[in-house]
Length: 344
Figure 1 (cartoon, rainbow, N blue to C red):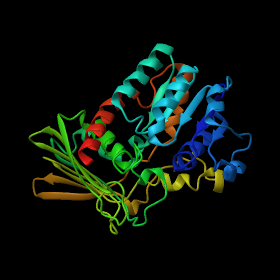
Figure 2 (figure 1 turned 135 degrees about the horizontal axis):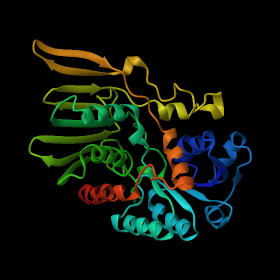
Figure 3 (figure 1 turned 30 degrees about the horizontal axis):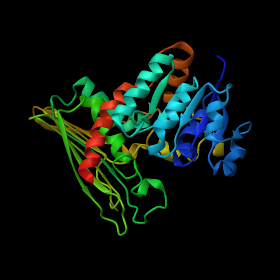
Figure 4 (figure 1 turned 135 degrees about the vertical axis):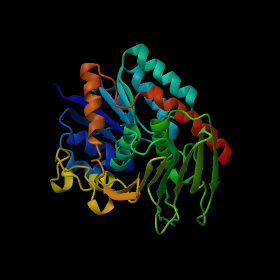
């Protein structure tokens, strides 16, 4: 299969840690150009990749796929420009900041016959895949409670757009977007939602401690939390059903591993051990038995971030569905829009 000529617009954390290594490590893509002032520091790791402006990348007729990982407020306009230029497009989450604009982009891609997808990579976290399999298989029985937590300990306020009042900044549009997306993947679009938002760190401009409640039924409670002042993080997932529970601590290892991927240490993204978690972090599965509760460690499924771009390549070359249907993200944005108004 001919490699897909690709341009990457944005080289902050998303470009450096996720997109550039995943694209370079996948044999289906040729990373032709990257925009971003910091790319020069890393260019030695990407031979044959030029530094260019975002406008030049979109205008380059040789480039087939444009990947957008710039500040959230710029996603919509850049994606529209790329689609109008006849490019396939991957947009980093949360896609854009308006559900109306998201629908327009979905419609434009469909009209032009172009592949459009959203990089919701945490659909491929190993612990999430494990929880998803338990729910799909009915192992825990009817669900009564699902808790998803993403805790950090970071007191210092970073000097970047994510920690400012810039449109699309803040924890809600960052980690919150992942947590809501995962919940909707598991349970569908909720009937209602509400949130609690606090600023806990000195000098915080945006809420850095958030709790989101999604309403599904009188018997199912879904609670999503993210916080920046947790010296000892709580469990990543706590899932309770009528037949038992799943409790999981620790975070998926892929983000850390991508920072020391094959581009720097020789570790290959195609290594069969990629995404495998330390057994010490495996979660606990507790199942009701006639004589009590049986508790055992449950191996965490391997995380699979590289599969995102493999599916992108197949969608472009073979017409298969994109890894994340952008239409499926529109309800996520609608929820985040409303919660952002609640947060003030």
